[in-house]
Length: 247
Image (tube, rainbow, N blue to C red):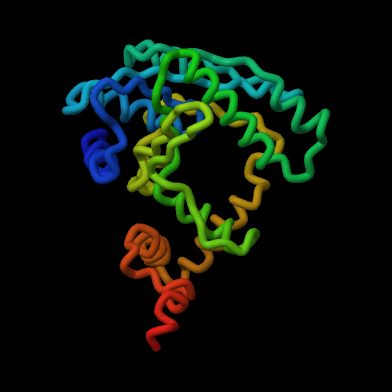
């Protein structure tokens, strides 16, 4: 997958949902994984020809896991090559989640604390937007997690405003397939996760479940994505309740 093809798909999402405007200063949350590194590279390339003029800064949150330390040197070097300012924020999130709180389901607390730290640093750096590396398949997986574990039909939006901190979250890769991210990221310096819960989460279970369904229904992810982005196909009980008096 070439940079040009990746940018073509990403630009569709940026344009359709008006994710970037003139004068934006965007903080890219960079964990070092394939998704965030791909987003950083694509936004840096997009900045070169974008009709909207915007600034970029990359921010990594060092979770400080007790058993291993993350080396962000490859990300620092990538940012230098892309002419993107880079900041690493050191925290004790890993210690709090695994040693102090000893969470049996650590992902929820870790995610909340990590996002809080990222948003705070972005605000300190004068940013008005934070870009996250979620892609099309993340949106599908989140919907399945909400359905199976919370009894809700819900997923994240391509853009959302955080009024408490006055920041807008954007997900520029909302239309990009994970398979394309995997292929593209092979050319980038991906940093291995040191999280003890890596590959042992409910999200991984859901991904495996959908993959299993895909053996019988190859288009399952395409169908789920289509259902999510086309509200005219929505037909649940609230629509019936609105019409019940007329029936």
